[in-house]
Image (cartoon, rainbow, N blue to C red; front, top):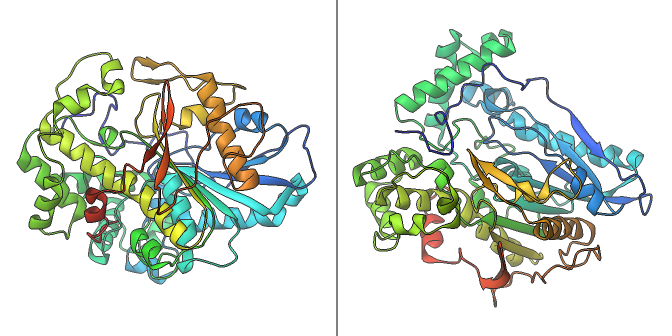
Length: 464
């Protein structure tokens, strides 16, 4: 399929020559120069990047706006095959989901040591965007949920729930890496240089793409069910109540699917084949039912072409109706429906939950990040897609940072009492199902966009 016009390269980027390093188990601690107390609340961020890439976010603007009330920590973890290669041999050795265990050990370290930086170990909030948000999900699910986790609250930015495939698929992935490295076993893989293993992992990914074992928009390596740290699919664990019960704040962006859908997808046959490759074990009849929830009378080129982000892009290109359906299904299954699964499970467990849909800036996956994270104090959230500039909004950027700071400080996004006057953000309840809907020029309360038939069906497939 063709590349997305706004993302050059295939879905399996060649990072064999990279600024990244396997020696990455480091963390950054940002402490205010004038703390208001000796035991400050702490916000720990887990970066995203599809579990295969990424760097820590920059929290300078955030810490400055919090006016001495919070400490910010950004952690790192092993990525790609280094952190998420599975298979029977790896599971037997107890090192499946190593990247998730890296995250948990970082959180444990912060809880043990943050008092030396002026932080309160009993007031740690974890946060992440995309795969970082998916990681926050799994930290809540780890070991079936814990009564005394190393955090007291969780914030999810456009949390990414990539499919967790069955043991047969995971074993085949492991065999592909062995073949690509000319190794016969785990001992041999451990003897490779970091560069050699990275190259082998990339070749395995490319071969899997050719054989339709993964698809455009997914990243091949990621968390798996290991029957130890990760016991089941996230949706099942949340719905069963097998998770750590803490207050949650959840956001997603308005258009979560376009980044991860190829504009080369142009026929219904391609659409069904793509979804079959994504969901593996789901019958064709069920896929037909899902696609039927996204009728062509609504999900066609007009839907995308009327969106602000599409109008702003420089350079015209065509989008087919199957493309529009696919981006909608993908976005709903990987990000949008999980956002409501999280808040629903939390309120069912008696916890406070808040949800936002962000339709400002690029409106696409990751849109909130440019408003929240920057080294530049007071940064307004300006960002680019390719050569197209999306102007930021300083007032909106300050409001987002205030919501996050307030929640980390007081478990309520409305209570920081900082310099910015922000619209009230109500709790999500079964009665109102109200969310905060943020657009470039207005903020309003709305009924939850994802409390719908599509998410009900997608949540029942056994794929989330």
